Length: 126
View 1 (cartoon, rainbow, N blue to C red):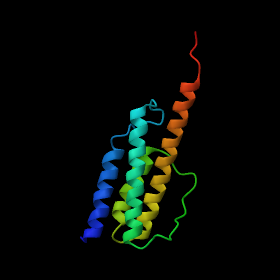
View 2 (view 1 turned 180 degrees about the vertical axis):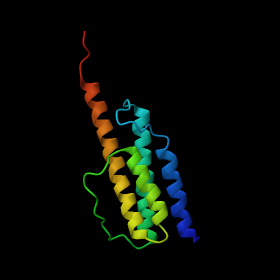
View 3 (view 1 turned 120 degrees about the horizontal axis):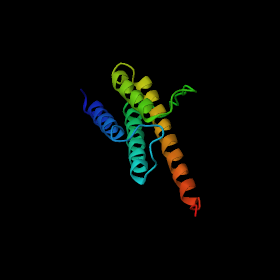
């Protein structure tokens, strides 16, 4: 394996390691810790996308995303796993999967923060 692909696989492993630390239940209780883990997962996955794009000259490639797919931490994990399988034979498809995973993770992270802010702004019932 080339040193460049080794960098990609190291980042892939780190992204999967982080994503496994996030409670994946759709209705998981919002917390600062969960929000931070989601942010870290999205950041590592975004770095992974950068590495793939840079190493495989895909900087100008903008993949289209399937609409209506599942939006969950598990779906993002599945996309990253699929990218691992596709990296060597089809780096363009691997990149598309990683970009879609970034979109999912960023969306979930934004939604979690929005819920936490709404809960914090609600007055207590007395």
